[in-house]
Image 1 (cartoon, one colour):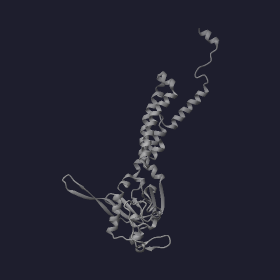
Image 2 (cartoon, one colour):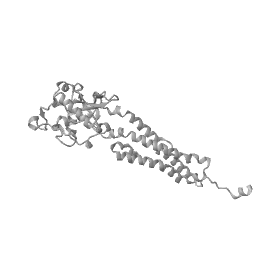
Image 3 (spheres, one colour):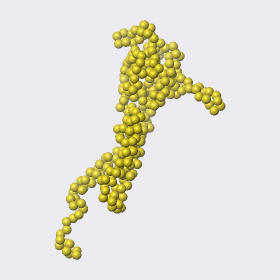
Image 4 (cartoon, rainbow, N blue to C red):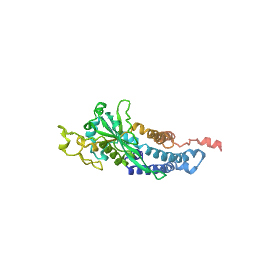
Amino acid sequence: TVLCCLFASVHTVVASVGALLGCALAASLPLIFATLFEAAYGRRAKADVPVIFCPCLGSAVALIGAFVLLESSGLVVGELWRVDVDSVKTLCSRYAGVARDRLPRTVCIQQAFIKTDWEAGKLRCESNEGGRVECKAAFAAAPIFDGEALAAAGLPDEIWAWAVVRGRHVDANYRPDGQLCGYLAGPDQFDFYLGDFRLAVQRVIEKHALRLQHQVTEDAPTPADAAGPPTWSSGGEGSGRKGLQASLEDRPLLLAADPAEVTSQEQAWLLAAAILLCLCPCVGPVPLGCVFGYWCWARSDDQYSGRHLVSPDDLDSDF
């Protein structure tokens, strides 16, 4: 149950299985207690009230804890499927042209600089109550260079990735140590609006007339004209040139949102789930294990189950 809930954000099927297992765990807890403490359930004495009502309360706690754990899945998966690279060029060489299901969830780049003054956006038009159509910049993209000096030079050949956001402007949110962290895949808004993000990238290329002068290879750079025009696949996955040879449009897209900030709410959910599922006295394996262990130890010392030997002389005197 815990594993399925932790990896729920990987696929919808895993999330569904985790939810079903959470319900099954909540339903099975009273049955387990009724089997272990059959005598207490039969007596229904006042001293047996904690044993009877504890699993009922534990069922509610287990159900809430499972669904809270589902909400924190994105944090766990993002930390497990995370990579660190030294530069944007290294990021491009590893993941340009790679299918999205093979991309890591999050990435942190040691040397990166977003050239925000080259950003451009894709408009989204909607009709208002008066019937007028309003168009606003809903998706923005900006090129990422290996450093500020290279960004100032503005050579298209030094663009190794694209920073994209859903909004009017790209936020260059660097960490205190200078790292740039974001998502290569995973968040629902990223995958759902992937086509809009690619159109925003195309808008930047058209606006600033960006064109590769040399096609990078492992041996030596080759003029882009000799290698043929850059290819841009509408799907953006598994087609066209890969690695450093990828065209500008096919270079990695980085959702410019720091996972440490985006998942702040999920961190709170994960802490709550740990308290509910691990430390709660009525359902947590640690406190329940300690209680059951103590009962087993205490029972082993009392070989007569609470009864004591009485000599026949004492019985005769009582009667």
